[in-house]
Length: 66
Image (spheres, helix red, strand yellow):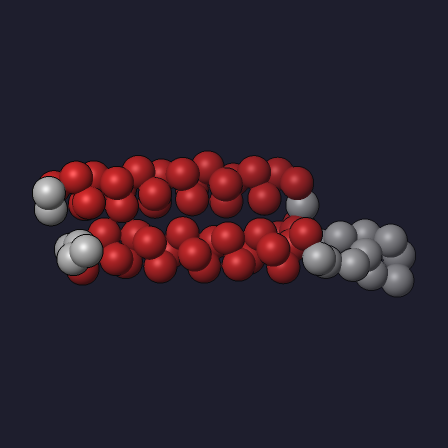
């Protein structure tokens, strides 16, 4: 299926965000038992919301190409 370049970019962004979430889930606490903010539960939640928005844009792009 052929989709627009814009929809492809949204898909790539969603994939990168998912990769970042995977890295956060595998993060280990430092020597003081702290996990950096970029790996916090709140950060993961924000990225999940952003992934949803990106995928909605992909959906719009796919629907428009039908």
